[in-house]
Amino acid sequence: MSGRARGRVARNGRTDERDDLGFRVRDLRRVPGSRLEEVRVVDPARLGSSSEPLRIGDVAVADAPVRVETSLESLSDGVRVRARVEFSWRGPCRRCLSEASGSASAELRELYVDDPEDYAATAELDEDDTDSTPRPIGEGWIDLAEAVRETVLLELPLAPLCDESCEGPDPGSNPVTVESDTDPAGDDAGAAGGADPRWAALSELRFDPEQDQG
Ligand SMILES: [Zn+2]
Image (cartoon, rainbow, N blue to C red):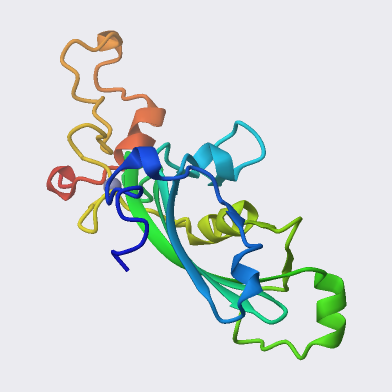
């Protein structure tokens, strides 16, 4: 595997890595059974059709490179694509609401054929072989952008955590007790002894058990 295109494809050489998800498959298809393995590192903006980041709810794909490790295999009637997609996400922690982030990866399996409609009508589709119906090969090219986009959206965490041990809001910065009726410099000192009934109602809502006596 390391013998391929030695010198041109530096192992970590970003300059030699293509940053799109288009694959020329004309040569590959001349020999059924042949394979093409490539790693592409793309800007997540390339996966969307607008300038908005890909997101589901409050969780979005982070502005960090998306790595797509692909394996294309030539079949007699199309190209089978398998890929591992790695990306980063960001969104509010479901417990403490602070910004959380992380990375995720997903497998992609697709089949590309010349005429998807015709193919679906004639071939006995192996349901286990792909995640969806066949996609089109256009002019000798396969564009994985749409498939990668769908894969990423499906893999975004729905309820992220900043940390597995997150215990929710910090009581120090987000007090849940009501401190009011003991204010020594209370503005309504004239009403000493006659506590406002609204405060009384609030004091019953205390969550601090230590002050719940008396
Ligand atoms: Zn948290």
